Picture 1 (cartoon, rainbow over the protein chains, first blue to last red):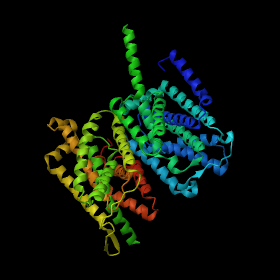
Picture 2 (cartoon, each protein chain N blue to C red):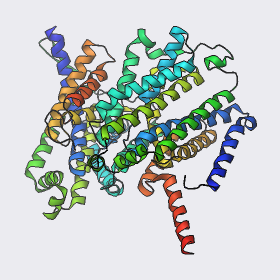
Picture 3 (cartoon, chains in turn yellow, cyan):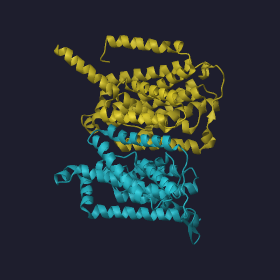
Length: 326
Length: 289
């Protein structure tokens, strides 16, 4: 948000391009990639609130993704409630679940917080695998296909899905931008820098962490509902997949942790790389995508821990300093 | 009923020996280098594949292949320390956590490309043998694995207590700065700690091979167990990790016996989460970091 003026113009153009893109891109393969990019940018942005600003490095966001997915699906199949309502309900369930999970995990710091978050997501997956009467167990279930029914979040083409996830991403970015400029945003950054110091200057650290975890998990749960509606299928392995937790963290770190646009830029980079690899090598060899992801992640950590946005700010700052010197 | 419980306890105890090798490695690295190695399970996997190839290509027994897998992984540990971990020491949590996490992802997926996701097994003459004691059934392969695991843990304990290098490692884990003032070279100590930890993981891999399939994701089971054991046994505490691993093996086995075949992990995680809720500093007490 330092680029006021030109920045506004760039943003307006970007929004226009994003809105018009489905009119130009009609190939179902391409729009599928775009939806994936927007979806993970959204999840990454949600993760970034907790992981990026407050530096609480969760690897368990799949817990909320899965809870959101299951809440809306259960409401739809058992009670015929529209996924639009289910989505919000799922968000609330995710948000409420973050309270006990946070109560447990925030007792730990650093790597042990990360491990505890992994464990909670795994426990949820195991529970949904185990209790088959409640939620179809390991086989999962397909979402009944109702044809084109916007009220039930089902559409003929892929473009409507694109706009839904674009809207979700926009909401997450607006929330992030608002938090970034608010008092809470500075609290979060202070906690991220040094929790004890933040506590010492009078920040109620547990409360701030709890609140941001609630927001982050609410948003992540919305993504779960969207994804289930998009692929018409749910099972514990997809809904609570560890790769969701990984990618949420990865896109933020690569793009620039604790920055507004970082997760989005990271997703574009990683997902484009992955799509190119896929069209180049085909799906024949397993593991190529994550091999490349892990190499990119390692390179970022070793050479540029602030991510791409960190680099951009650095270069921009240098140029501004030079022009000021004149 | 008593017999069923006793049998489950024995099964759990035997596999707990393997968990112990992995957890001791994790806790050793954490104690000395102050890094949580998310890739520890992947080094078990590498040990398994080394053993698998030695067995299928040269007919070498998995137990004998310890003399290959342990040195290879020791050297790997030194290299990992020198080229990767050394560069993030003293930085904040993000690089410290995600460096070894990225390493873990990398190893798994390279293994997936090289070996595919297929299960690989090695069948030895003792794979199906068992002792029958009373009504109890003790598989020979698991018994060998357990005994060797306890032996290696014992050797490590003696090493840490009696040798200069071992004492240097304990000193470095208690207070790195003071240790350095006493003339201890931290880089050397860290490299040895990584080497030993990875060698233990490699040993776990070799010992598992006669009764456990190798596949690229196999390490995840063991790393999750190790994390729980390390938290339960208090971070950085070798004996704590050992005892907690054995207990977890038993808890998992009882869970499988009495709740269902897919419920071993639920019990373990429940144990972890309960511990966090009640005693976040681990069963043996101590600081939370």
